[in-house]
Image (tube, rainbow, N blue to C red; front, top):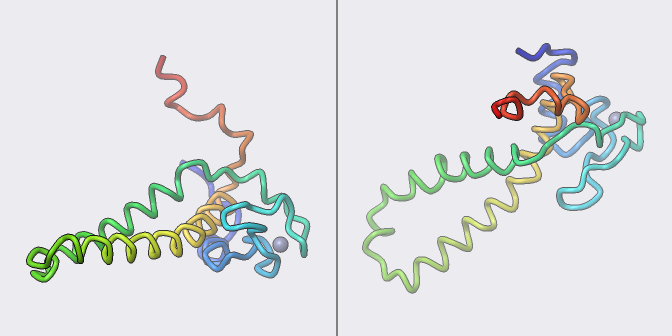
Length: 131
Ligand SMILES: [Zn+2]
């Protein structure tokens, strides 16, 4: 079990808003999903917190459970002509995913910051020991 070394809620909420989890003022990203090497305000090393595929999994989980599954309860989705409804639904899902992904990644980096997990902890992955 990872030990929380920084306030969890504060770190994650700062990351969710796209800001440095340490100070909350510096920008976390320099491009859409590219994390700044260091915070421009407090000089925290932001690049050492791994994100890997975690944000993508969480985004898929959220979109799938909070948007796709509830959407299937509406009869209009089933009764409409797929040639009209499918492009609209897929476009909306794409936009929702693209809007959510950087926020989730920011929250993920904030979580890694709060837990003190760094890239150098990669040797601790138990899946690598399964051979
Ligand atoms: Zn900072």
